[in-house]
Length: 339
Ligand SMILES: C=CC1=C(C)c2cc3[nH]c(cc4nc(cc5[nH]c(cc1n2)c(C)c5CCC(=O)O)C(CCC(=O)O)=C4C)c(C)c3C=C
Ligand SMILES: [Fe+2]
Ligand SMILES: [Fe+2]
Image 1: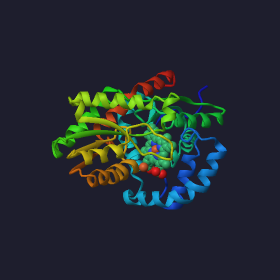
Image 2 (image 1 turned 90 degrees about the horizontal axis):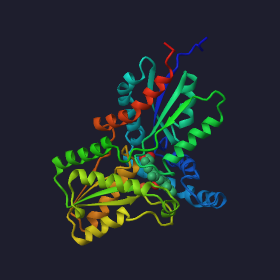
Image 3 (image 1 turned 180 degrees about the horizontal axis):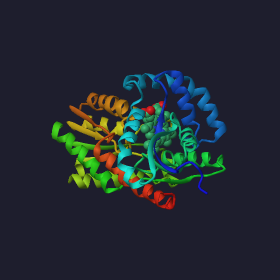
Image 4 (image 1 turned 90 degrees about the vertical axis):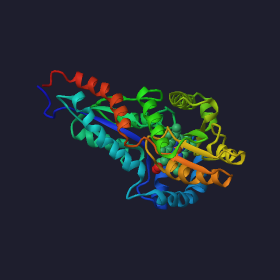
C-alpha cells in the first residue's frame, strides 16, 4: 500500500542571508546569527562571545543598517533576486521531474527564509526529495560549508528522513564561465573596454585558506577561465578580494588597496566584476559600486564601473537548470513505480 501523499521534489536555491529590515535591531538579529556560526568565525567560542557582545553588536548594526537602507528597494536585493531566480528556474525543471511534481524555493543560511523553516514546511507538504543548490559558485567552508551544517542540523531532528542532495559548487562550469564572459562583453558594448578588468571576490581570512579552505584557488580558476575566454592579456585583468571583517589578515590582494594604488599610478578606467556573488547585495551595490568607486576616483582614477552580478539573467537561470536537472531527474528515477 502506498502512503497517501504523492511524493514531490523540491529544489532549494540557497544564498547567504540578509536582515528582515534595514534597521539597527533587525541587522543586529541577523549579525548575531551569522557571526555566531563557528564556520564563519573560528575564534574560540568564549572569547568571541565577549568580543561579539561587547564590541561588534553594540556598534556595527547602526552603520550597517544605514548601508542597507541605501540599497533597500522594498526588500533586501539579495532576497528579492533569490525569489526571482527560484521563480524563473521552476519551468526549466518540470520535464526533468515528470510525472512527479517539482517546485523551487528560496532559502538562506541566516535570516529569512531560513533553511530549516523551508525544509519543515515542504516536508509537511509531502516533499520527500530535496536538491539544495547553494548559490556560491566557489566552495568555501564559510559559505557552502554552513549550508551543509544547516541541513545536517535539521536532519538530526527528523525521524523519517527525506532524500537529500547538495551541490558543492560550480566554479569552472562551462555555462558559468560563459555567462560571466557574456555579461562582461554585453556591459562593454555599452561602456567600452577599460584599462583594467578587476575580478573582485568576497574574501576569507588567510588562516582559513592556510588550513585548507580551497576557496581562493577556486576563485583564481574562475577568473583565469573568464579572462582566457575574453582573450585578455596578463596586464589587463587582476583578481582581488573584498569585504574584510575584523583585524586578522585576509587573502590578498585587497580590492580597496589595489584600486587606490591604480588611481595613484595613473590607471584611467576600471571595470569591476564580482563572480562570487550570484546576486547583487550589500557587498556589491554598496561596497563595490559606491565605496570602492570613491576609493578609485579619489586616488586619481577617471572612470569606474561595477558590472552587475548574474542575478536573473537568462544565461544564469540556464546554468542553474543545467546543474539541477540531472539531480531532479535522478530523484524522479527513484520514484518509478509510483505511477
Ligand atoms: C569572518 C567574517 C566573514 C566571512 C568569512 C565571510 C565569508 C563570505 N561571505 C559571503 C557572502 C556575503 N557576505 C555578506 C555580508 C557580510 N559578510 C560578513 C562577514 C564574513 N563573510 C559580514 C559581517 C557581512 C554583513 C555586512 C557587514 O556587517 O559588513 C553578503 C551580503 C548579504 C546581504 O544582505 O546583502 C554576502 C552575499 C561569501 C560568499 C563568503 C565566503 C566565500
Ligand atoms: Fe560575507
Ligand atoms: Fe562589506
